[in-house]
Length: 416
Image (cartoon, rainbow, N blue to C red; front, side):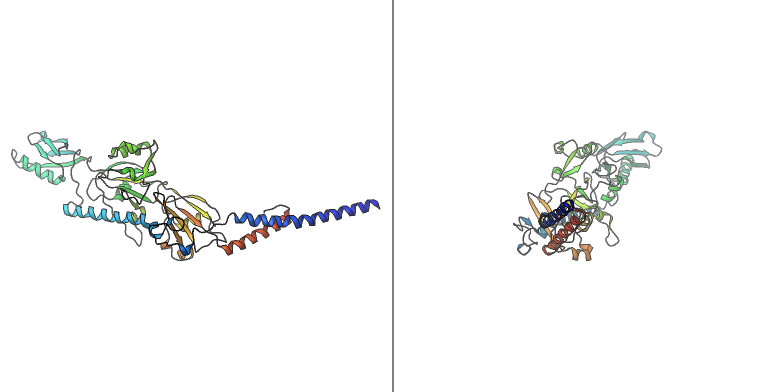
């Protein structure tokens, strides 16, 4: 009998302890669940009502500039690219030398004269722009086409020959070269074998872009002396650095054995490089490709793709590598999509402008999803923030809290 009473008391004490534990531990677990959720709450930057997103100057929303400043970098590059193309096309039209290669200093010229073997030889254009032949002497060659030099030789030979028939060929193109460096299959210097040679043709000769390439190409026009302000995060091999030096860049611009410069501030007035998006060069079904003519001395840089950070109400926040054309929708998709409590009307994109300035763009994701043509192309270093919607966030915390309680009741532990 005494044993039965003791066992009954033991059961009552275990039951009382269980009730006490449930009353004390359960609220504690619930509070911890809600509190831990608050730590992940992502607030919007500044007050949208006080933020002028069209501002290009001044302090806005915590020191951020607005929408116009956000896109100013790309607009500046497009304007400079348009002016460059117009200028070079005008020069080509004025010279009336379409698709003709003009002989320059250093080119190797092969000359053959019918039935006069003594005059058959290969000569290099001197620094003065002349070539020298027996009997003929010095004759200007730089700035002429093959046909023009051929006629000039015939006139000179006509002084001591009857009906001379010289033939002129360019054996080695040495004067009209451009440099291609960065994320291409075959970086190096390439000859412009005719006028009107385009940027996309040179990229094709260089074997195309590698898998590491970004979606843009940087063109440094010939004559520019401050290339060091254009390159910065482009990783180059030793061969690339040698090519860059041989293109006329001062060796002092090389800062480290495996790096080379790029624009610290793409909005700086002294910017010398022009950024061209690769998809502009190839075009699409609705957009014709643009033709960017090259000139001797141009330097073409294909930077490696950088990364963007996606934070806030996404399922997998973190840093993601850019591909050739990563957009806002693509970055959110890479991060696993939005959570239940995301504020889809206030997606934020932060962009570095240089000189300590940043721009903030707010995007309504619902409107963007219905018109993907307005999708925002992301740049290296951009930060995508997805703020929390307060009401939805509170609901999510309650659901998470009850889920934790149910899990604790079923398994005796917190969590799934």
